[in-house]
Amino acid sequence: MDFSETEEQSMIRAMVRDFAEEVLAPTCLERDKAQAAPLDEWRAFCDSGLQGITISENYGGSPVDDVSEAIIVEELARVDPSFSVMFCVHVGLCSKTIALHGNEQQKKEYLSRLAGSEIGAYSLSEAGAGTDAAALSCRAKLSDDGSHYMLNGEKMWVTNGENADIYVLFAKDVDHPDYGEKKHGGTTAFIVERSFEGFSVGKKEDKLGIRSSDTCSLLLENCKVPVGNVLKGSGGGFPIAMNALDNSRIGIAAQALGIAQGAYEAALNYAHERIAFGKPIAQHQSIGNYLADMATRTEAARLMVYKAAWAKQRHYEDGSPRHTKEASMAKLFAGDTAMWVSERAVQVLGGYGYTTDFPVERFFRDAKITQIYEGTQEVQRIVINRSIAPE
Image 1 (spheres, helix red, strand yellow):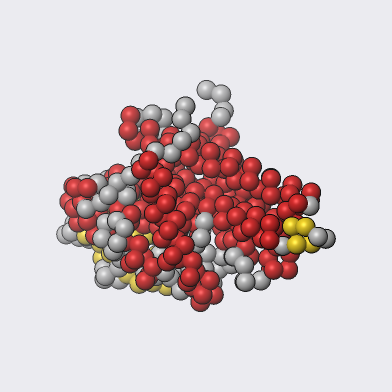
Image 2 (cartoon, rainbow, N blue to C red):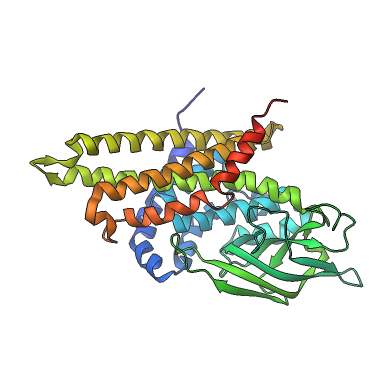
């Protein structure tokens, strides 16, 4: 058992940390206030090639191992959680889903664009289908000539929704034999382009946290999608969605880890500079105990996130069992850690922690969503409980 980073992983960490501190840090607060997506920063990031880490070199990507992917997300979130989730959705839910389930034509067409500067998004949730992913109301119907589907409905909570070019989107094919027979019957995954007829972006959400990440609804009004843009055929979408959740939960766990690390570092630095009663507040037992617990919980979360990423790697390399349990455990623990550590960070900074002069109030707001999206903490416990049940 080896807990050390490889040389490549250390190089990736250093490169992403430099980018985050030099490019993201100067603009993240103003973007957060204005709810402005980091589009200029994304274009700068694309110069590194890391937007293609889940894409084969055959399609212009620059693949890395899954622990390295977690490290990238962690380092981005340590400075700018909004940018980190933009990255997560692009490389994981969109690019990797097409890489895993797309046919050769789909990969050539879309992965090459996603390995460039085009932005990817993923759209499963609806007003009545969030935690209950099978309860989709968005409908798809094949045209009389069989050349395309017409999609109708409204999708919700779409990260990158306002600025994406390519979407992996789910709807129910009303002509599928299982439609109406099974709860998830007819669930179908489509690759949808922003330019498709009948596609439009709806309301942009005004959020508590990750405000520089755009979250929107999508409106489908006879949206015309070529039949060649169906992933794995009609009715094959539900397993794709469940597999994508396994993968994306590790990304959100890594985001939560980065938030915890960023909040902890801000509190640690402040506590060693702030003098009260003749000495740095870090030397007062109450604050020192906070810092010790923050460091310990963050490190424990890191081990769980990296183990989940390692399990994911093994699953795809040698057919090891699915990484569902590890992904849910990592998200559950890391999400709770991010919330706990960021709240303590605000407390350590006192009145300063309640202002935007320091980043801990933003980390505190950003942390909450890691306990909600990609399956709430309650759902993670259900998944874990099922996975540990005796055979």
